[in-house]
Length: 76
Image (tube, rainbow, N blue to C red):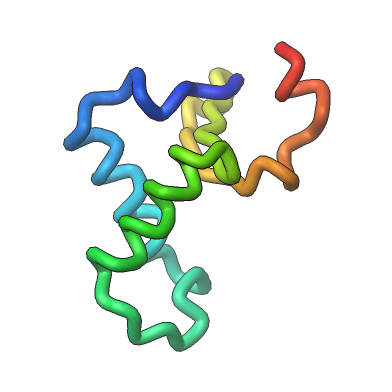
């Protein structure tokens, strides 16, 4: 299930993005400040390049590049 980013409260969205950009393995040695990485993801969401995916079975929410999302999820 895709969750439109603009339906989330601003603080909730920011925390979700911060969680994503600070996960182990996502920085790849990137020394870019946290605020910059958060803004990059926020812009990707606004441009439609990234989406928020929610799995009701596991109750987990994650960010994905739109191009990596199964096509059938985008058609729901």
